[in-house]
Length: 582
Image (tube, rainbow, N blue to C red; front, side):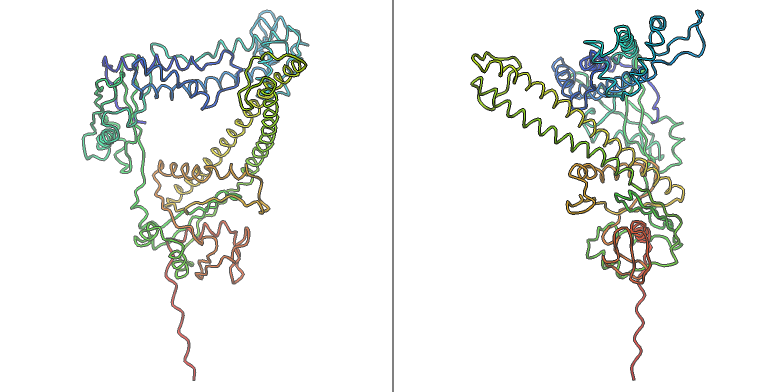
C-alpha cells in the first residue's frame, strides 16, 4: 500500500467521518455481548443483528453505501475483540496457579492471572483445586464453566467460584466493546458504488494514478465519492502519486494501481493506493524454464521444473490458449514427443494425506451430529403434533413458549411434554452450533493447507525464474462403490470450493509476485508417454504410471512432468520407410 500524501479535511469529509464513526459505534454496541463468555456469533448471525441498525442509519439520512461499509467494518472489529477477550480469559484460566517469580514486599508471590486481592484470599489448596479444575478443560468447556458460574458455583466452593468471577470481570474490563473515539481514523475502501460515475470513473482514477508509475502521465486523478447523505452532492477528492513513490516503483513495468483507500483522521485526509504487480503474458514466449503442477487429493501438489534451451514458441502458446478439446489434444500428444533436450531441474511432491485425514475426522463428526439432529427433529415433530392435538391447534401450528390452558387428566402430561419440547429444541441449537464450528474448522484447514502449497509453488517458480503452467482443474466426488469413499460429508468438504479456493489462492500469489502463468488442457496428462507419444489409459494404474516398455513413474509426478514438457514437445520423427522386398 502506497501513501498518496495528506491533505486537510474538508467540511464535507469531516461530516462524512462523523456520521460513519457514529454509525459503526452503534453497530458494534448492538452486537457486543453482555457477557464475553457467550458463544460468538457467526457471520450470518452478526448480519442479522446489524442489518436493522444499518437500515435505521439509512432512514436517518446516511447514504446506503456508507452504512453498508460501516457494517462490514463493525463485523470484524467485534469478532476479533470478542475472540481476543475469550482467548485471554481461557489463557488465564489454564494458568490460574501461575505466580510471579519475585515476591512482593509482603513476601508473597502474586497470582498473575487473578486480581491482586485474591492472592491473599485463596489458600494454596484453593489454587490447586482451581488448577485441577482447569487442566482438563478445552476452550468450549472452559467458556461453559464461566457461563455456569453466572447462576451457581459449578461444583466449586463459593470462594473459588468468586475468584473465577473476578477473573472474568477483570478480563471484561480490559477488553470492552470496540470504541471509535474522537481521535479515531476510519478507513474507507472505495469500490464502484462509492464513486460518482461508478466503475467507469473509478477505473479512470486508478488509471490516472497508474500513469505515474509507467511515466505515461503525471500520476494525478480526481475521484468524486458519494456524499454522507443519500442523493447529496458528491465530495471531490484530488489525488496525486507522490514522486518518491513513483520513482520507487518505476523500475517494475508490471506495477499497477489496484484500489484506493481513504483514511479520514480528525484533521487530515490520508489517501492510499493498493499496488499490484501483474505478470506480463508476453513473458511466456521465449521462456526456457517451466514449472508445472499436477493437482490431486492424496498428493495435493506434484511439481516438476524443467528447462529447455530452445525456449517456448509463440505458436505453442497460441495453441494452448485456443483451449483445444479432447480430440485436438489427443491428436497433438500422439504426434509430439520429448526427450533429452528437456532437463528436469527439480521434482517436489506435497502429500495431502494428513490434510485429508483431518478433513475426514471433522466430516465423520459432522455426520454423527447430523444423525443426532435428524433424530432430534423427528422427536420434536412427534411431540409438536401431540401438543397441538392436546390444545386443539393445527398439527403444523407453532408451539407457543408459554403453556396453554389444558384441563383434565392430560394437563400434567401436556406440561411435561411442553417442557421437553423446548429442552429438545435448545439441545438441537447446541448441536447445530457444534456442527457450524466444525464447518469453520474445515474451512480453516483448507485455507491453511492450500495457502502453504501455493507459497511453495511460487517460491520454486521464483528460485528457478520459471513460468508456471497448470491444467484446468476438475476435482470429482468419490463414488460410493469406490473403496476410498468416506461419506457424503467428506465428499462435500473436499469438493465444496476446494478446487476454486486453491486455484484462486495460488493464482493470486503468483500475480502478486509477478510470475507469468498459462493454463494447459489437462486431457490425457495421466495416460500419455511423452517419449513415444503413446496415449493409453491402461498405462495409468492407481498411483503408478507403467509405460508399454516397462518404465515406471509415480503417476502424479509423471502427469506434472508431461505438463512441464508440454510447451517443449517437438513433432514426432517420421517412421523410416520399409525396405523394398525382392
